[in-house]
Length: 472
Image 1: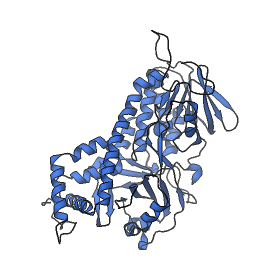
Image 2 (image 1 turned 45 degrees about the horizontal axis):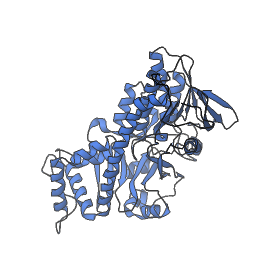
Image 3 (image 1 turned 135 degrees about the vertical axis):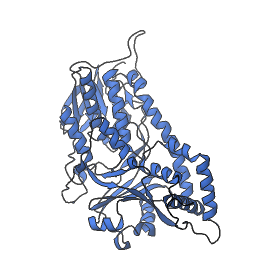
Image 4 (image 1 turned 45 degrees about the vertical axis):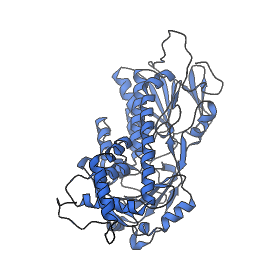
């Protein structure tokens, strides 16, 4: 690839002589810069150093992160509701990343779905499908010091223990220089590397500047969300929220997902949708279904809030020559399981770098297929959430969903709607998998039956209590 003054050249493309090898393999002494020590950056560093060790390759990994995840509030915040599934915890354990007990704020045993026509608690469909609430940083603004550790801080320490060098500097610029990559820091220093890994997320200035460095590069498509923290106290949370994550299916335009997550003395509220604004938030906080979740039916003033943007469409392409973007900076799942996507992209990028090379061609052949797979699943996810929006707007559909879910929770029979809702809320399964399950004849038949039954004159949307194992 021809040098380009001040930029990346043609991202995703490289020029090579006929018959030449398309790879730029790492060698002993190669230097890698990882920008961002969130889950994607820390896991990439950990995986790469493990893989390099397996092939007797001696590389240096510098992990750039200006924040301190031991701090409370904005200095240690990583803009995340912080929920991980048991399946992801188990996958991480197979990689040698065993989350200690003090990283998990609270184990959540169920989802409680709130609608204007009633609510229903959805218990975990399988023992291994539990979820856990975590803090990505070390808690909200003005909170008391926590007995637990941050998830991101734990992963960062894991990478450091494996051999990554943590540099607490803000990276302000990335550019190509001859056959290396140069990064500039806020303190005026700069370093050259054989590879730059961008894992800084989509809320950093660096992420927004990448598009200016190469004409053909498309930055991720973004939407604005809202996250805030309420200090309720452990006893109040135990009495009102319990060990459940509370999800709201309300007829509010542009609101795709809303959840209240208990964490120790605090509850985290997340609103996801199409550019959350004041009008949407006012409608949400005015809903009686929301107020009933708080002590005395009164929503207290939140102690901390932010409007982070999230990735709803991948960078295109999320790589270049000696450059790769992982996690939110590159490709992530739509709305859900961002930590799981960080794990998958970090591992795929590390495998490409360790066993193939750092050229654009290497990333196109060995990293891009995973990104395309996630992209394809996200397109199905957009359709699924579109159907969910139709259900939100149609009262008769909400009544049918409530009746079918409540019937399943009272029975020992198949829990088809409950399983679909659980995986949709938690992100535990691919959207394609969720969608295909809704096409099962038994699912369709049960849904039609419950739609009719719940909307007959004089009938309640909630079925009569049945003995366990009784008919639905």
